[in-house]
Length: 379
Image 1 (cartoon, rainbow, N blue to C red):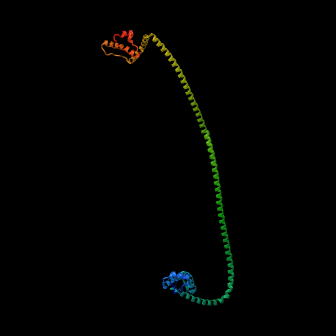
Image 2 (tube, helix red, strand yellow):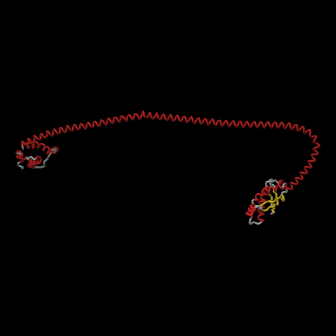
Image 3 (cartoon, rainbow, N blue to C red):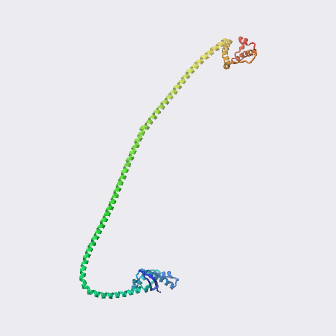
């Protein structure tokens, strides 16, 4: 297949727009693997489709290469330009199973007459060379005249050059020395700062160690102070408190023993008093019993006379009990105009007396002649 790639108005490396046309001969590779690749890429496509794909690939590479070359390189060495395009494009079309058999540049032109200007330049170069020949002929005539002057100038130039070289070497050496001094100064300054930082770090580390030691000592002092305070508290508070508690305990125990002894003494006293009272009561009982026995014997011996004596002995007490309420009365007024009425009331009380005494004592006063005579009128 013959392809004619064409790139219009493509800028070169110098920015000049060129139009380049070429001719390429390509074919499908016949090796088994590459033929399979070509079949995979182009199976079912027409020959024109295949040409379009390969043509676009070639034109793309042609455009990219044009942008990297100058106009002179493209125009003056077309074979090298074509070879470069073939080498760059061959791998891409090869992956499609296509082989580039040949590629040549057919034509190169531009729309700004850049290439024609190159021809004019060449003509101008020839004219210039002719003018140079004439000038060289004229120059040769004056060469000898100028040689002496030239030698003098050369000597002067060599002297000036050596002076300049010496001066330049001096300045370079001076600059090198200054640079070396600056480097050494910077290194010394950096070393000084680093050493200062190290010393500062050591000082800080020692300060920390001193603080740690001081803190440990302070902790030890605080521990001793705590022990001292504890002992002081034991001496000033705990021991006196324990002594006071012990004293109070001893006092309480002594008081307890005292109370126990007092209770025991009181119990013993009560027991003795009780025994004494019991003995007294017993003696009194025995005496009363003896008295009552004697009384009974006397009553039994004297009979009614003894009973009468007892009654007569008890009558004052009975009268006192009966009249006790009347002791609280300042005055008694009997509201009655009949004196016989008062008398009758007295007689009635006297008549009731024997019955009351009989009820209380069992002695019948009505049988006593005196009482019977006093109360006979009412009985």
